[in-house]
Each structure stands twice: as structure tokens, then as C-alpha cells.
Image 1: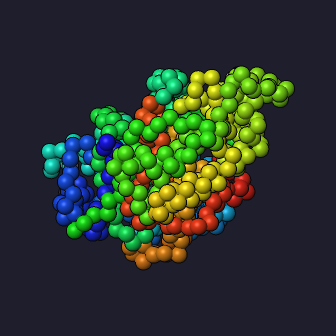
Image 2: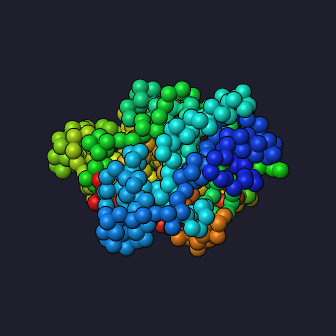
Image 3: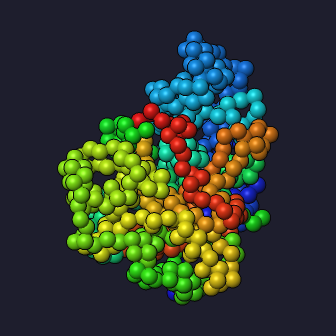
Length: 257
Length: 257
């Protein structure tokens, strides 16, 4: 009997990325150097950080002009006004300001600390911002990979976020191309013929988590992970990360924190 | 150059589990039938459902006596009073009651809908409850696997939960044995020698998500997944799922919903 085996493959020795780099080309070349073939149906998970770097979404600290609002919020949060200035530029709604904590709804609809602005794995004099439109970033990488290899893959751009109710961070999908964000079991039957009414798994978030298991967060230099044989993922030409974003009204957990 | 490859192996044709079954023995036997060797360092992810079934944590609907409180809450939630009775028995604190939604802090400290009580993949006349003490369940499975195979593995018991701020469900670790729940990067340096101050990844939740990618939720019959070559996971003899549970005071997201 042959078991179902999914492989999570971290590409070693990925080069440092600079503004304007052709990320898809570097992914294809680095896969080849790793002796990893890119096949139809592969899911390619790309860390937000290298997408932001390739797209020039890295800002030097000495080029940031601080607004009055940023000065005021920075004082409340007790953080660098330049960081806060960048966060506010990325924010559509401030959700919580308190010492050390600034939680916002960002321009993309993500609820996160500091709108995803951070300093890890970028030069020391800089902050990185999330890609302007991560779905679009994913779509471009996907199309270029098809152009270079002739293979139809899916692309997920992933970032690390904290969560309510739980210590520590995990990985989330922030942009997708070529893959349905959910594996929907509603209306299907279980082993005992019970009808499943609720189960709708956010499979792209689970894939992002699986990829982080080999990516790491420090000096690993593995910002791209290829996932093979994941039969449960469904291809889709028009899916968007927006399908994952829930309104406050619909969120079952509203008013629970 | 050889890439880092983690394998997620779903064991096929896992038998239906009954009360009193020796789950570890069945895992070892099913792995053998799948031609999967159990090795030192493997991480074995077990779905909550089969642990509950083996431990007799499945309750027949006609054996449930409904309390007055359950009648009252059931009316507010507009759900079956027998379900609500079971939920209340598993609950330490009710967090939100509204039509269709009952969110509680369960006896184990988990914040979840219906205290994890549900009807999927159990006989149609029954509800399943979470294991009394999932860490203890994981520890017993782990020790028995070592007894049967001579190998030192880690065990994670996993269940599917909804999350705030995000549509769909993903998998969470609810009990662990032999593995540190976090991969802590705090104090380490990134590619640019920046000091990482915050990153503390809830690796057992990510592993649970990776396992769900092959487990599925319906008729798949794959309640056990073996993860191989995950070098980033750290062994630990005394870790507990309680390390993942955050107090309301510490939770950065408090008052944000």
C-alpha cells in the first residue's frame, strides 16, 4: 500500500534579492541549482520579504518624513516615529494603540501588528513594507514561471503574524495566484455519512504554515519553498486573498477579546 | 546541491477506532502496512477525533440529561439543548452567546466554538468531546510507540478551529508530547545581522496545519500523519500545550474585536 506523501522542499542558497530583480527567474534558477524540477501542480510559497525587496518596498530610515499624527501615535505606542509613520501610511483603520502595541487594519484588509512593517531580513538602515498588492505580485511570479518553464504552478506569498488567543506567531497567506484559498467540505459526507455543515478549511494558510517549517525566520536564507503532490489543493484562475478577509459583522469572534 | 525536504505522510486505510483501542499499536501497524518506517525524530500528528473515540469521549445523544442552564443557553444559541449541555460540561467560562454561536474557554484553556464538541466522523447518534487531557493522551501514545518500536518520536494531537479576523478554519495543536511548542528566534540574528526581538514561532500549530493538508475532514480516513526530516522542531521531554495558552492580560489583541 502506498501512502499519500506531500513534500515540502526548501530551496537552499537563495541569493539576496535587490530592487528590480526578476524573482521568478531567480526561483527557477535556484530550483535548478537545487536539482528540484518544477512540475505542473506545484505550489510555490514565497516569503513576503523577498517580494517586497524585489518590488522596492523597502524604505531607508533617513528618507522618512514624519507627520504630526505619527509623532502623536509614536508617543502613545512608545516606538520609533519613523516606524509609526510607515505603519500609518499602510493603514486604513487603527484598531488598537497602547504602549508597545499598534494593531491596524491595513490597506489590504489584513488585521495585523504594525501593518506588517518590520526590520527583519532587510538592511539595518531600512524598514520593509508589505507588497502593494500581494495577489498581483503572486500573479506576476506565477505567469513568469509558466513563461520560463512551461509549467502551471500556484503561488502563495506568505508572512508571519501574531494571532489572538494564542502565544507565538504562525504563517499566513497574504497573496495568492492559481489556487483556491479554501478546501470546502460543506455539503460533503463524513465516514459515518454525517453531512458536514461548517468545515471550510483555509488551505492556503495551512500551506503557508507548512512552508514556514523549512523557511525559518533568521539566517536560513530559504525564502522560497516548493510543495509537491498536494492533491487536495484546487487550482483556480481567479481566486483572491480577499476571499479570506472577513468583515467585523460576520466574524463569529467579534466582541470576544 | 541538496535541498531541505520535509515529508508529510498520510497513513492510508486507517481502521475505524473504538473505545479502548490501543491507538499507538494501530498507528504502528498501519504505518507498517503503508510501508512507512517509524524513525527517531519523526513527528506523529493524530487527529483529536480518534483519540476521543479510543478514550471513550463520545457520548450518545439519548444518554444526555439536560440541565436548566443548558435549556436556557440552548434557547439563546438556537441549537440542540443536548449539544449545549455537553458544551457547558466542557466549559470553564462562557465568552459569547448569540444565535448560532457559542464561544467558550474550555476546561483546557482553549478558546473555541462549542468547546470542541461536534458530530463529524463519529456515529450519527453521538457527539464527540475533546480528550480530557490532550497532553496526557499524547504522552501515552508517544511512550507506547517507543515501547513498540524502540524509536523516540514526538506526538501532536490536532483539531480544527475557526479563528478571529479570518474566514475558514485551520488546524491547531491541542496536546503535545516530546516536542517544544515554539521555535524561538528571539536573540538570534537575521541575514543582515539585525537582532530578532519578537519572532517566536508556534511550530506545533504549523505542524498541525501541515498534517491537515493530507488528513482532510470528510471520508478520507487519514487521521494519522507522520512528518519526517523536520530538523527545525526541537525535542523536549516536558513541554505542554499550556505554554501556547495566553492570558487575556498578555494577549496583544485584547479589545480589538
